[in-house]
Length: 329
Image (cartoon, rainbow, N blue to C red; front, side, top):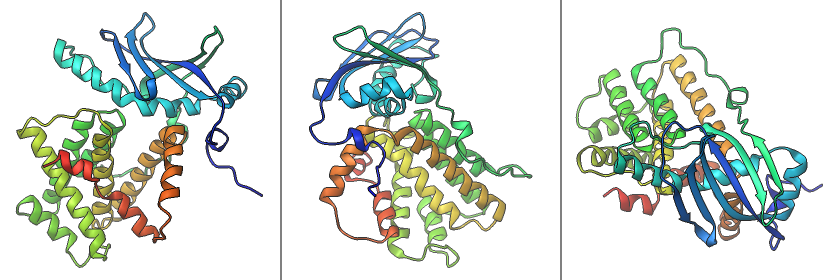
């Protein structure tokens, strides 16, 4: 019996395609000048404010089978995936207008502000409409209650996850480093950042023993710390390219490894484990049905078939890419 993976019916080569306009309607309480972006492969993004809210129009081709199925299935899951591929382009333009015109209430778009999705096949008047019902609360695991309340460094870490999911990437990076600094303060670890970090990673009680893995965590957190300093002191600013999502995501993961392998308080450790599970579950829900990413992932698997342990696999993908290292110099 063959196993059908997520998106498999829509990932076959040379599938017939249809052209559609995907209209994403967001909650909005601010004015925005019309945005018109020519995207990859002659796809097009148009963003404007209507009476109902902020509209992001995405003109692209999709598998004809997906369009026929969406009319029957009444689930827009793959269109959440398409949205996650383009939000960075829209947020670049939103940030530009915010600081150009001084729009105080303007904030980044995220999938959680989405109200509805309307898909129109062109050229035709045929329309399929869905309410945006991405009900995360009923899907993700709940963290245990800390009876004494979360220490400050865990609160900052949780806030960094919230900022990341709301596309507030600069705030995410700042909060991550604030979290580590409060972690050092909580455990009375003194010295410069590098010295304090090494004292934790080189401690005999640190649960990750393999030097290669500890070194990846060390380099990632030193780079993240340097990135935060560049933002604060050297006018480095997020441009919402995919490299900045990598900085935030891998920063969150690296700190998770640091905390879970050094914190001995059982209730804090368990709370952090469940926070990580919740964060990764939300990301999976958002990205799991991204057909563009799934197709690219298949090509990567064809090119990279070397065998490696699960730990090697995880840590090789935790390390920051060369593209990110070029930004943070």
